[in-house]
Length: 383
Image 1 (cartoon, rainbow, N blue to C red):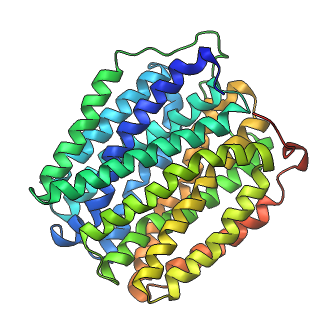
Image 2 (spheres, rainbow, N blue to C red):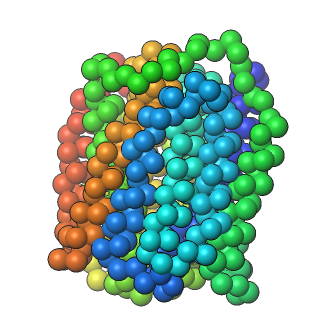
């Protein structure tokens, strides 16, 4: 249960997450088809675009500087508005360079929002509440993704890609303007350190975060692209796949928070990584359209266990380090993300299987490091 004095922040984050993921999922659903059909992007430019998209994630450490002049909850809202503007202009820039520019704008909003979203969650909710809140927010995001998929399918019958980008982007802007009026702040919480700092005692959190980002970028950059280019998935098929995928996530995500409290982070992350090794091998070698679609759903489902890395950090961190740790974590998460999609694009041109084999190796490394999570943090808890 969420304490009564924390409900304002929970509802604030819930509304922001819903707006972010409706707009972002709409963008994701049609982006690959728009890039191939309208902007003429090949594997090389797709890798380059995805690398540029992750630059704002690498620069997430700037959030620490931004909150010196702007409260974190306001920064979250401004980030939503920037994301919406980036999505809105995408369809009006149908060239490789235009796609890169609009993606960069959108990505600054998305990554800065995600950084502040995590920081506020760790600050406002205790160690029992946080897994539940994070999993519920992911469930809300999945619900928003379902709505986005249905919206895109309907809009595709009546309009071009550029108008869908415009409508869904402006929905995010409108939600952001509304949220600017809200104030869910509790001034009694510990003041966050507003300086950039790496601490050795958090090394395992940093390492798991780095490998998670590297591995995830292969999935983000090339899984849907594989389905479009190799298996010929249409925009409608991608939208339907996203809807099915998010329906599974919507119902399963709330369970994850309870699983973390009951079994601990080490068990859930071990389950995730053991499964993902086989998923990436499947991406590399399977030739069945249906099986690849099923792998995509499994991939997204077990990736939800990634919130275990955040709850692990909350258990080992000082309360005043939550904002700094979130910012540094997102930056570390995206160090590899800046170059892996670009390098993966080059490897893709040699053999489509290579990026997925690399991801399987990175997953095995994560599985090994997960076993170093201290056993005293894994005691069963009751929420």
